[in-house]
Image (cartoon, rainbow, N blue to C red):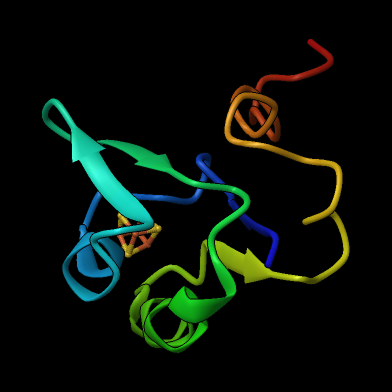
Length: 83
Ligand code: SF4
């Protein structure tokens, strides 16, 4: 499965890391690290993490999940872009 977390939305609540610790974990204070190509056997846990995320930051197999990764999700959507 492919998944992507919008790190601009993610607030580090760690619900996902609690529900699917094999896929999501926090590094440091509130920096989320995740496996963008998680095992199929994790799908149930990931689905629970998707549902539990308070800011709906996790997308699984959706548009953009195929070619975006943890490293490319950063820095997009800045409210100051274009100034
Ligand atoms: S549950 Fe959502 S907001 Fe919380 S760490 Fe995971 S992706 Fe980020």
